[in-house]
Amino acid sequence: SLPNLFKNAGYTANYFHQNKKSYYNRIQMTRTFGYENYYSSYELRIPLEERVLDTHLLKNEMLRDKIVPDHDKFMSFIITYSAHTPYNIERTQCNASLTEKERLNIEQGKDENKICIKAQARETDNFFEELLKVLEEKEKLDNTVIIGITDHYAYGYPNREEIYKKKNANDINFLHKVPFFIWSSDINKSTKVKEVNSNLDFVPTVAALFGLEFESKYFVGKNIFSPNYEGLVFFSEYSWYNGEVYYKDGEILKGENVSDDYLSKINRKINNILDINEKILSTNYFQVIKKRLVSN
Image (cartoon, rainbow, N blue to C red):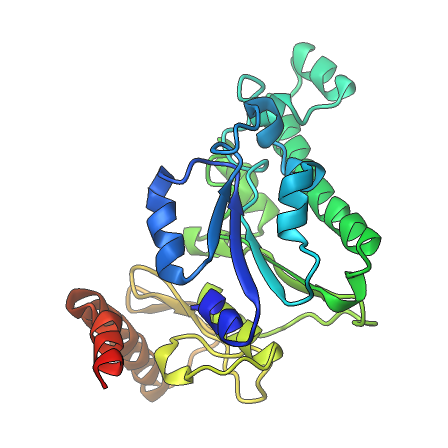
């Protein structure tokens, strides 16, 4: 896991979220992944109207000093919350994020969902702004990398037609194209990765950038900055997209025709990945490997 890779390199690794530890059994999950602590704003008794705002993680002195500690080698994994569904004024995360003008617009009958989603997303943006300020105040800005990765699109937004339009998509799988960015103060010119990639590529990419030691054979994903990286994403129903060709239900729905050999090659690759994944889960493979290593 990424926290274990960082810990092996001498970093601390801690996990932060506003919700309770029992939700999704996150406390067990974070322990399994190797995080040293789970800091829950709920467990810390921070009031609801405060903890639904992402910026509270940095405005609360105790949390701020845990997220950006005094020592240099730290990994802080933060799950933001403000932009999460639903998008209506009855929910605390929208209500707490609105400006007075936005609140008035909702009262006057303007699109509540659209106003709320923008206000909630702005609060997450404000979190990153606050993070930069804290890093600068603590003189750690030039020695810290900020990575943002998205787990899903705003599936709770009720206007599905607008989501498709915003994403310029005509297939549900393409709604899953979401932001992933890496920021460092010494990056003078931003670079956009043209090859398609997925969350599977996240750990190998970050590990390679930080020079962390890891065995690539245990990861399905690849380092997206490798010159040998071949962009490919696949979906739950075995469809796939390589940036040019979209293959689904035995048909090419986007892109030029490609050879049957190429289609067979990619389909075999995906079937093999999913087959291995199923066997890893059903046999508890990594626990077996761990026990063998300990016994030896």
